[in-house]
Length: 480
Image 1 (cartoon, one colour):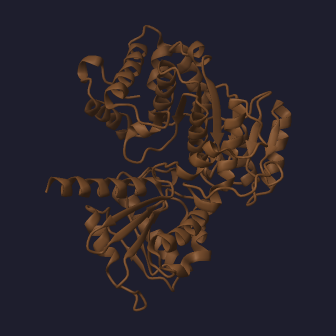
Image 2 (cartoon, one colour; image 1 turned 135 degrees about the vertical axis):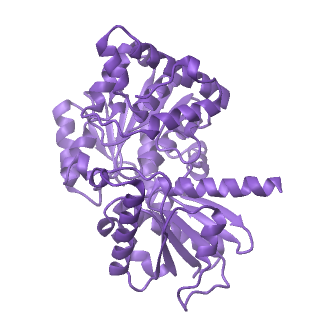
Image 3 (tube, helix red, strand yellow; image 1 turned 180 degrees about the horizontal axis):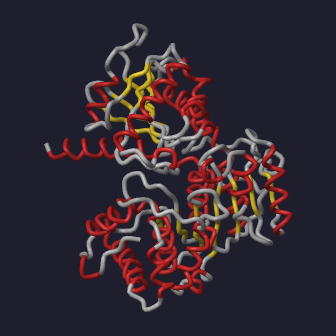
């Protein structure tokens, strides 16, 4: 871990951001066993005893784990509990990763906690113990943020903390907690270079969050039924009761329309309800209360099923969702198709897809297949600060971006010749640049008299880039 001594940095939120840029700006710090490194770090920081003060809900999965975590947190808060929420990635503000009662900490308070933890890291790196120095040096941004979240939740005296897994489960840093409830959302093929090439291997990695005697609620895994057996067998092995949450498990009729995710997120909201009720000691089969119903209908979560009317001459409306796997893209596109009709009041709106992926486009692009005819064009975007993957580690950022753009464009044109595809040579410099590109007519059937309904998806990093451009434009406009 790159660190700054207390004398080298100030104590402002701007200095927090500078420190984070240093943490994330270097080469990736690979660690074969994040869990082991995290456990050692917690020991050296003397945090184990403090963690015992907290109750935890641990959420793993491929699709919907962030949404499920957010719903769980909001429901627990509605029961009168003080709740911590740890999720990733953040969209606009790093404080989104560590929230208390579904609100950002003040910049001043976050700064205080951040430097308290960084100072403790610095003490380890200056320790006489070689082991302590090695442990601190091996840390990375995600592990630092996880440990920081524990520090904040203890200091803020939360009653329960909802912790979203970063990647996988078994070896993830978050698996250092002792949960009171575990949740595994819908599974899919993602991060195969790390978690395994088969869905069963991935399921086993996710199952690794299960603990003896701790109930684990899992989605019905409709896309990958074979994973249910994997989860149940692992649960039996470690002594963790596994409950598959389907229509028989939670027979509540007239489920409310959801604020996040639409109809495809009903599974996520049911998992959240059962987890929250388990913590609060509420019977799982009781009818939904008005308070619970209100949470499910009104909660918001940045970058998930987010609708942002932008206005302007074109009266643009942005729809943003960080879906990035085949299954999540299929479901989020279904949401967009319905929501764009509802918001525009038009059964055939002018829909434009803006997409980026660093994953295998031949697989993830198939998620659009049921709905592709609903788009008048697609724009293959690029992002700022693309992540390095194993397959592209030897390339420069520019080479990697070009390779991904070419691959995605070729694959789209191979799969969906009927929908025109525009490729971007670099990230957008302004939101107006994106809007102007969306207004370029490339298809004679496109009705340019209609307002553009622009769907931003494929990557949380693309969503973050576009959100920041929108914010920058609004700030500039307010100053004019």
